[in-house]
Image 1 (cartoon, chains in turn blue, red):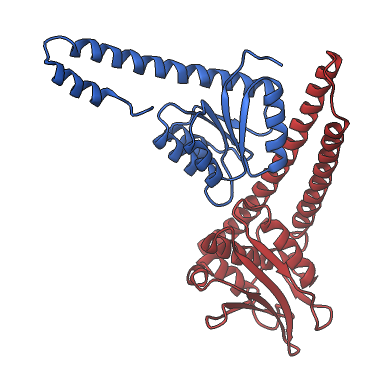
Image 2 (image 1 turned 60 degrees about the vertical axis):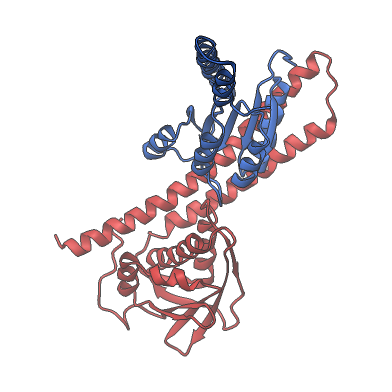
Length: 164
Length: 228
């Protein structure tokens, strides 16, 4: 196993055999994978937090992939999402991109390509997080100048992202 | 060129394309599972070659999964073939049970499909001289509207009854009244009129009925040309 990979992935597809095979392959490669067989289960799993990247099938019964993409991007600021589809159209690709998808892969895809895209998505997530942290650090440094101790505390509370 | 007829031809072609797209989607899913499972076997082989013990059950599960998906693929191709041949002859004598079976299988490839049950016909062999392609399109559309309205929990039971010596009645039990507010759409209505199919809906028991004449010639003089 490639122990250096510790990317937490949420894998969502209604094709259960596909889900199992891809999950096993990614686990062998060293990724930490959680699976969900429908959109609602994916949203619930994501609610528990801890995912770096989600890989979501576009066409699913009930809550479909586009809805999952929209909800995950609204609720989880830094998660990157890769959409999968067996039915690629320009319209669906454009819609997913507008909703914030990192990439759009058509099934069946090359597994090495998926690994490459997963790593790119993870890098982008980390880059966004670092940039966000840097901005907050800048803001904290500016606060310490010319404010009363109570004023600093209030301003710091505003900058807190709420994560414990 | 008659614009009305031209539109009718285009809609038939659009239906043909839509069904083929859903079949290709199903086949892509099958290929994706085979591809990933074969890839997993390769990964397990690589692990085994480095001395990592691999459970035989895992290998059996992979090969079993591949075999099942190959069968699913064959079944899908068989339905695709049946559908492709439904345009061979514009009007012919068809077994309505076979036609319903195909339409149900085709709607099963839609991501939003519900459950459809076909009950055996108790009134003999249900044959009619009709346009199989258009009748399939009408049945398919009825199921699509039901699934879209009710959602993945939709459950429809289809049965066939003889209506005297003149027609067969295709009965959709459990058809959502809201779906009937949208169905038939103008395109489906035009297709139905072309082959003499009449719609009835009983809202007290959520039942949609399609009356299919034994022969098109006795009910309509319109030409039936799917235009494909």
